[in-house]
Amino acid sequence: MLYNGFVNCLKKAETKRIKALSITNSCAPDQIPSAFQLLIPNIVSLMEANIDHLCNNDQIVACFGLQVTSGTIQSNLPRQLNRIHYPLQPDLHLCCILTYLVVEHNTPLLNLNWHSYYSLIIDFTSGYLMDSNHLIYQMLKQDKPGHVYGQLNQMLLKKAWNLTNKERQTINNVFYSKKPIFYLQGESANA
Amino acid sequence: MHDATINKKVLLVDDDVITLIAHRLSLEELGFEVDEAKNGQEALNKFTKNISSYELILMDYNLPDTNGGIVAQKIRSMVNPNQQHPLIIGVTAHIEKDIIQKCLSMGMDDVTSKPLLPDKIQTLLHKIALRSPNDQFHNSLNKKGNYEIHQ
Image (cartoon, rainbow over all chains, first blue to last red; front, side, top):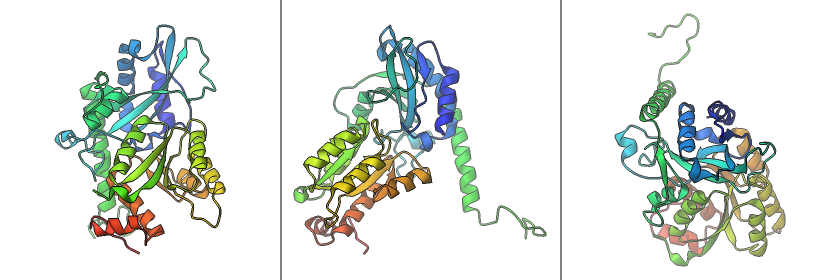
């Protein structure tokens, strides 16, 4: 996923209290398959439904970052659901951190620094949206259980994974194909 | 797993608490002593106070106050050129070649992508061992048979 693509999707899904903010160089969504952009409006809806957990009445949420987390949940779910993102570690979930600032209403969303940001975690394998404490709880099976905000639309999630797997399959087929992909004039695929 | 007395010190630099926890756990399990910094300035302060004690610095690229390349550059400039500087590894979610190239040209010794999975940690251990092949750390890793060095 490209950063601009992520911010543009966020912009299209903006609500009164959840806004998109572009801070390039704050994160790198490069490793997240583009198909997961499909879920951004759904993520925003879930955030909107939990807005009281995210900020006070007189504040808004300005989302600016998304990237894979360094620590993640392990289970047999990726294999079970064919949602393997890390082929060398197929038990690892694809968890991403969405970063946001909490600002007062009417704050111009320009030139904001991101020293004090907040975050929530999206587990694109199970579909759950959670806070960092819940991810840590899932990772270590200790500490406070944290909070789960809800679950992504399963049909959309399935679609995103299907698209991702299909794309990967195509890349693998091309990459590992013994036959050349392009043929010189006069050659044929059956030669 | 490894000898707890190895006592190699690592500085983790990342603004994300989950990254810090995940990396800390993996490294402590391998016998490292871990320090943390959440931004570039904190990293420089910690490094200044412990200038010769870090063996490894794991540096995020996107920091709230600067980028990891600039911090690496400053750290390299603080170390006496006759002394070995700590191994500075960029740990980033970026996969773009120009960012990786930038990190390397600014003084990082290598760059690896997030998440830092066990196989990547093994590669880091390999790099450390290659730098000091005769020390206790290297011997300990080899003795236990779970690490093989290719010189």
